[in-house]
Length: 187
Image (cartoon, rainbow, N blue to C red; front, side):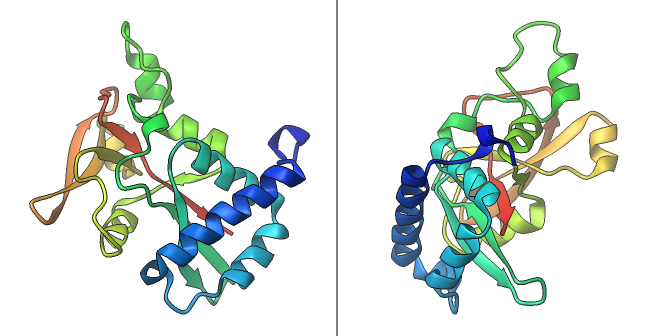
């Protein structure tokens, strides 16, 4: 891990407090999971803590959503009510960004996720997230798109309207003020 991707002791402690408060406030998201075990795992993986900090600083409000016993991994999703503010107005990926001749967005969802050390939620993960609350009721989020769709120039995104999860398609080069992406991190 490079020193660039390392948090100070002070920021690490502050972030762990933020995550713990969010964990305690939203217990239905992680039934049966014990915070002290999550914290221990994070303290042993400073690179993952750095990625969680990136999620936090871009308004994602990351929280634990599941534990994989077989792999001994905790999964964090962005749990902000709406698509993270600091990750909106972006197209889907670098190819889409490069295809725009003018009015290029500031970045791409896949590019930002890679820089942050996280993955974009896929359709199944987005649907799972919606079982934990109501997310993206006013915004939408790019979703990790199947290769077949992407090869044809498209990308998928989801939102929650009319008490229903909707998955849509768009040209991957499109971008909107109300569309960002949600991340996933396994620790």
